[in-house]
Amino acid sequence: MVRLLGRIGLLHLNPMNLIIRSIGSVFLFYGIWERSIEHSLIGLSVILLGQLSVGQK
Image (cartoon, rainbow, N blue to C red; front, side, top):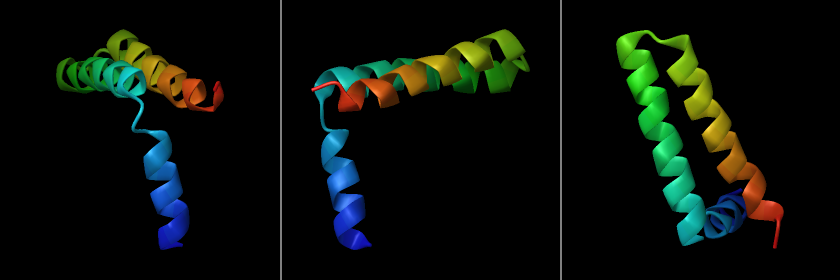
């Protein structure tokens, strides 16, 4: 189990992925804070975009 989590963690060390997911997190937290469904959905979409870009090597 720990080995699997380590491998998943190594996939997320890509600097571009970190930047994309950080931007998505900002949008998501802002949307939750302001109770804005549009910002929340944009944030989730950007986070998922970063997640999907991990396997594109």
